[in-house]
Image (tube, rainbow, N blue to C red; front, side):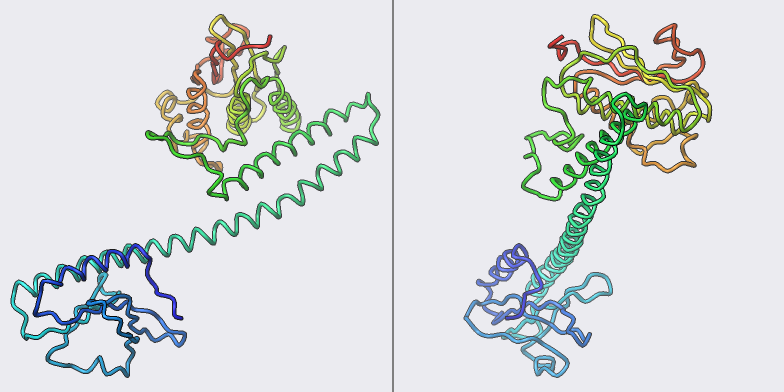
Length: 377
């Protein structure tokens, strides 16, 4: 059986449109066809619906069909999208020419079905493209797991060969921590490929900031996901030949630590990417009566005043970052996450305005967290 090249929704609409002619004695029959390319490449007209529903068998209309032969009682109304022929309505009537009210009525139905058919085909193309993308996504996720497993295996083997007091153990442990973080991203991507895994929309839905797997469970200590980020930053500073100043102590804050770690990771990446070579980068952690404050700072040139608030908007990038790859989403995501936690993220210039111990020149991104989430000290 040939597959009908339209959706069920279109067929329902088609039935309603054709059924309205039940009160029109002049119309004997209506048949709606849609164009469909054959394997040979020649388009043909495939019947998708008719009125009245009398159980007759309809066949496709090709170049040799007798239905193409002109007849006084049979006329065709094209269904077009611009110059493209999407289909046609075959009208058999008892009178010719049609009275003006009937002609207008049939023409209105033809225009409505043409637009519905255009939207239906566009939807089918989008669904097909989405299905291909989901299949490619599943394949890529599957392939990503192999090198991640290899990295984890090699890392553990290397740890076995190192003495417990070796200076290189922290580097290997940092690599394993990064592998675990990559695995979390892969798992989150894999879950996003399954529609049943998505969170149901609320009556007034807010944008999903992070996949659920990347958000930490409530009450999780922030020190756990923050430690590998600090190790990564220290290693990056060493490779880039720039000073790095880490926090004197890890925060005791508990809450959605996964989201906080994503914010700090974004801020540190920006600091290393956009500050000039040789400029210092640091992370400061302070406890205040209102809650903990984490500051990522750099000793580079201050961000232009006109850009200081704009860079928190989605898709907006600072002038210094334009030559470098990026999407302009990092700071917008970081601020949205901070505010969803009950905190905030602000740019403060100069860093010394945050704390006199910080550098005079540069930029400071200040993440404030609510004291209400602090527990388990």
